[in-house]
Length: 332
Ligand code: ADP
Ligand code: MG
Image (cartoon, rainbow, N blue to C red; front, side, top):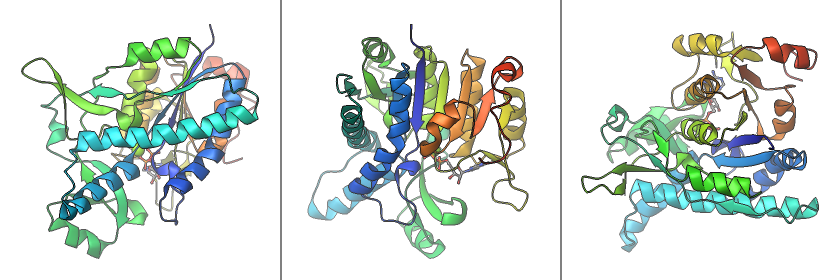
């Protein structure tokens, strides 16, 4: 049976830095990002793609709020997440089909699945928003936006961002259907934006919860359900780093889960961005996953081959025999 690889595409990695975000811009980024993913498909791996939605869902919410003046109806945040799955799932499917056609693999179907993720209504995260969404703002803009009742946090050198609750995902509702699609040979796009957050109502129905689940944690749940061997976490930095943003900053090349736990506890990885990627990697490797790689989309194949990015494993002993020579320290 072919191995299953889960490729998680960062919502931020779909936006070209320094350019106003747009649909055409995201298509362009995807054209570059997905070539390597198609290389892995051509090697015979089953590939499932997941994606983030931080910037996209923030823009959907902004549009909804701006539309109030024009009497457009309000969109609760769970519906904004569903819309972001539609937007990005559609773009990924179109671009993947384009590349597959060019590479004479047009027979491979691409299917984007509207996916729901179960969360607890009582999750303490519901009271403390941590998930950054939408555009970056200056300090002055942030001060003004707080008067609208928004919560904003300083999100690194690029400025301030609105934050929303991000409860811990418990289960992916559509896992069994996704597994069937993958086994049938489809390339599946799923758990977009971490999945639409739902919780069980008093009447025993799944109803929407106004939050944005972190896609890294939700992707791990899906990867475990699909018995995937590897997670390729594609983002807008080429490595996870120690002392991020300080003069002592250092790329992490190979990290065991034990080391990852220690660095996480020491506060090297910011909550809401690199933190969940590393936590998700620890969870996956602790539940049978073999490898996690954090790198940029254009390095996906080299990352999969162990040549670049931050390589996370339970231990490197058995991998060392195979790949020791291939892994270099520092950026290639
Ligand atoms: P994605 O959309 O791919 O999930 P995120 O913005 O959530 O992207 O996470 C990637 C970001 O994490 C980087 O752009 C960087 O600003 C931030 N970050 C926080 N801590 C670290 C770290 N220790 N090493 C590298 N990047 C970090
Ligand atoms: Mg993220």
